[in-house]
Image (cartoon, rainbow, N blue to C red; front, side, top):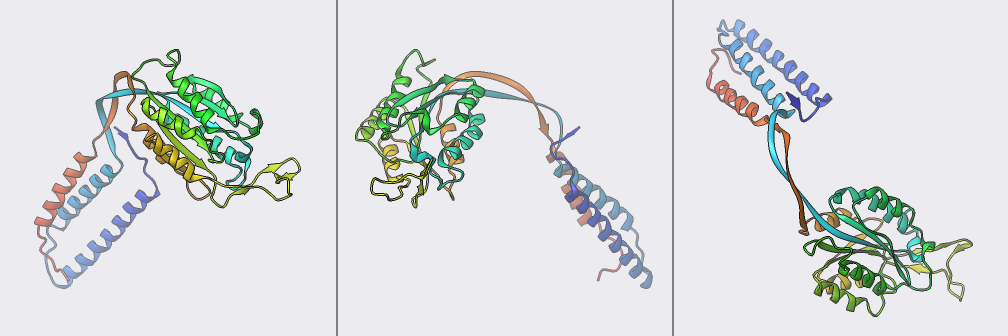
Length: 322
């Protein structure tokens, strides 16, 4: 027999309290019975029953597992492109340690949730590039994510349309698609600045082609400064530049593509909600296999404990009850 949970100090404490208070109860009941010259017949039987069903409850609480259960596991594949903004505004520190560093940290934690999917990486600023094509190799993809820096692309402005258009073309390319039934997903990760005139048009095309677009806004509405080698980025007039999350732009973009908007800020992390939503997108069934898993049989012990509890209530002890 194996156990689903390990016994901890909490269980030991519960057992100790039960024994302590039950001994006090037995001593008090016996003493009162002697004072009243009353019989304590049945007390030992009830004590035995109570110790047994308490033990059964504890065993059930620990989750005893024995035998095996045959379970069918389905591997459902999706094609996902992560489209990451590498403009200088992603160096802003309104999210510690910076917007880009926080995105890299969250993405490396996000990857294992989609081990059955092919994932690719597109980077962009005023131009867009395929940094990593669709792959099942999460170690390689993790390495590409860890090396992301804002100086990997030229900086002049941010063009969301170019990035979305490249992701759309990659999904449409039959050489990159293993099957027409594969679910095709684009996750745009940006602060939403410099929206671009063509972005809405591309979003409509994404929706028309049956792709799913999810946008992840990174930053805060109060904004943050952009670090440079000499301090912080400034306007030609000498004022410090404050970059802010343009959530409305990204919400509108997701709406045009019949998708959904999520946010990553200092006080809000909707990565788990994004993970859940992407997981619900039905992909192509790649593989089905059956595995043997241990079966938790806690309910057997719980049923027996409840039956003994009923018997305990029904048995009367001839003694004094105060």
